[in-house]
Length: 251
Image 1 (spheres, rainbow, N blue to C red):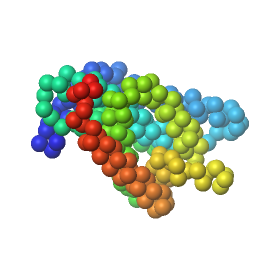
Image 2 (cartoon, helix red, strand yellow):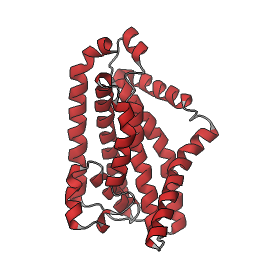
Image 3 (tube, rainbow, N blue to C red):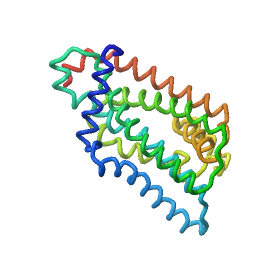
């Protein structure tokens, strides 16, 4: 795959052009979509709770942007193998390059939103600290998790095509079960004990601590996130490689 890294780059670029990412309005919508969602959720929370908090809006925005990195990896990765049917049947290449390209597209979409959040963070007046550098390893862990999820779900979709229709409900469920609309510190202990079953929970909690509060994330959360990412990546890779030879028949 390393010898074919140019193909991954060009294939990802063609996917972005197909989604009009090369146009001004295409790039603008990547920013406006999660930004408008965070604004809607923030207004609902303010109306219900009767109070406003700029830090909470920063948390909402930062968490939604990172969540969309994973959600876009899943939505693009789920059909990456099935839509590459003609390529698979006519060309010999590592099939795993297709879900990898989907994650590259998702990361490319995420980068502009990161710049927007930094502008929002500056306007709100949140402090800038050296602990914010923890965002780099947290982001790398997130990409590894997204890669594992994309590889696994692309293979599952070859056998069960309905998984693509079920995916929006799955991502919406993860949205509500993850610390996005709320901060992990506000959860009661009885509920928070279930966080170990959500692979996104430690990642989003660490991201919020780092990017919003300028604090170093809890080491337990970082290690838990890393364990989830490595475990899902290894499982997805093994599952994909063990079934790769059957793709031509199934497609």
